[in-house]
Image (cartoon, rainbow, N blue to C red; front, side):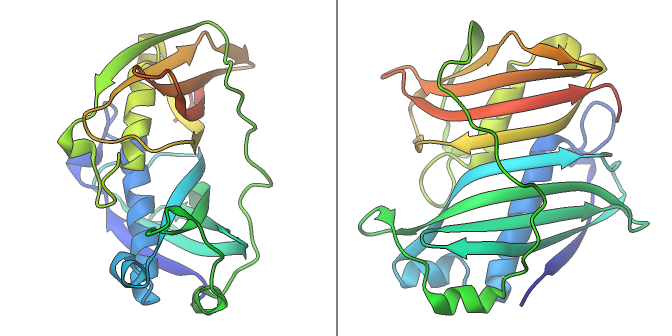
Length: 249
């Protein structure tokens, strides 16, 4: 199948304070395109579940050059760039209505046996169905450490609406929690231009989580923060993130 693409018109409810596509809804769109690609290859959620398999998202890496405005059309393209042992890389590119590249993303997925709840080797038949396109948007991912320095944070209780069809917290909700603790100055004066998220362990309904952020640092005209999501019950780090902010839209 190779590359797969879908066109969207940005609705008002997906816009942020500036009337442009919010980062959270951007992830929603990327995830939707990935799911539609799998459906088109007859390897969607239901088909894989019937075979006893599934995909678990491990990493996001996203860079946005320019956020599209509400009511604008965008085209999102996706493809599988690599599949090896239990892992697969999926890439995304986002274009505006004029065909200009305005954003890109890379993801890392783990193929699992849902009955044994452990990684499983990706079947060759599945790899061939996607037709690998050997083109990566980024060379590597950030190497997160558990100690991110002095932190502040907020606590959240996982709601029913946070849970997806896999019965754990939807991966997009983590970005919601991460952005909630960013200082108000950045929210008012800056735009989220780049971010990475690494998921370490699933979170389920009813758990209490804490979204923590370090003091950040300035690099030129940008501000960079490190984040982690922990559970109040055991203090285990469930996810890490890095956000890069700029005054440029």
